[in-house]
Image (tube, rainbow, N blue to C red; front, side):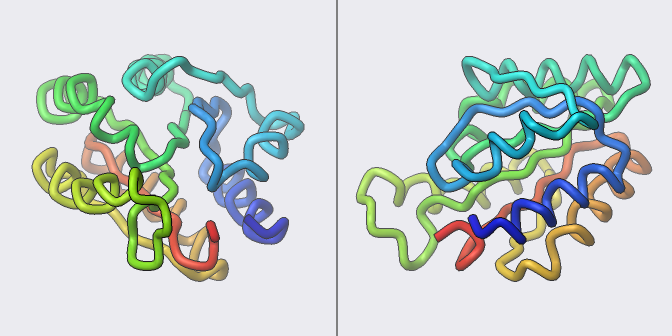
Length: 166
């Protein structure tokens, strides 16, 4: 990610009032993680799997604070159970920012299934999402995700793809 895109993500999270950032590092966001760790506004929590991150974000919501789960889109499949229980069953929203592995232009064979399954899984869990491939749209997409999720008591996702992550 370009430094300006990293700055846009951080600005969007700050504007949304996020204080806790859970993440499982991936290579497409490799420039983002050190910047999140260095930002004094956030407490960052590195998780061992994305399902754990979703559960922590749900707990943060119950405490009255705002969290975000940042992960590669492959982590969506790893977090289906906690997301289904919290979103479909309990009205506990988790806002996710995901890198888009497997989109057109992907050159790693192992990443193609991530792109093929992401949208069907999001749709099965009734999670609205926005795919963003322009830097100027990042902060607005983050703000919209929080506004919608906190009104609906349900998850939402912002997927960063295209030139933002290549």
